[in-house]
Amino acid sequence: AQSVTQLGSHVSVSEGALVLLRCNYSSSVPPYLFWYVQYPNQGLQLLLKYTSAATLVKGINGFEAEFKKSETSFHLTKPSAHMSDAAEYFCAVTGSTASKLTFGTGTRLQVTL
Amino acid sequence: DAGVTQSPTHLIKTRGQHVTLRCSPISGHKSVSWYQQVLGQGPQFIFQYYEKEERGRGNFPDRFSARQFPNYSSELNVNALLLGDSALYLCASSPDGVNDWSPLHFGNGTRLTVT
Image (tube, rainbow over all chains, first blue to last red):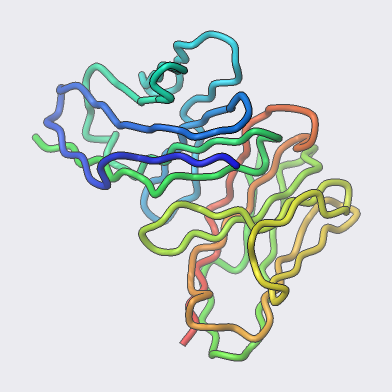
């Protein structure tokens, strides 16, 4: 079975500061990992995905994540936060198909002036 | 191109009632998945349908059922509603969902409130 743990339910950063959202996974098979973003009253939008190719994955809106097998981590980063980045971020894992995702509990990102 | 569309957007039901939620996938997508997102939590997988057949079921009671139609649209049915069924129900589609790793495209969801 696969699972993900997101450390920190709320993260607050200043505009222009580094964004770091943490995700650790547990998987009995080589995992496929995803980051999704959810804006208020909307569905989820894919930021990026790791499917066993390059360990450093670049996504949309300047986000990237690095797969570290030794640390079982897939942390999401962005060098400079923008006000429009304020949203809920979900890490997800699957070992079978991309349709059967197991999501973490989410991290709410707040960006302040 | 239209994205994944879900109807209705909001719904209020009473305990014990039945509800049907509808989803139209992106044109050309043959796989539809349903997720339940309780307030403050991540989405939980309920069902996946591909070519009208159930391809996966999450840990949900038999009160939850779904089906997929020839045009690939889908319905999620929940019987004997409980207060705990109050949640945002998300539908997602993908081109295949079985043998590919195309990401899921989510609709904006149906907010179900059970009173």
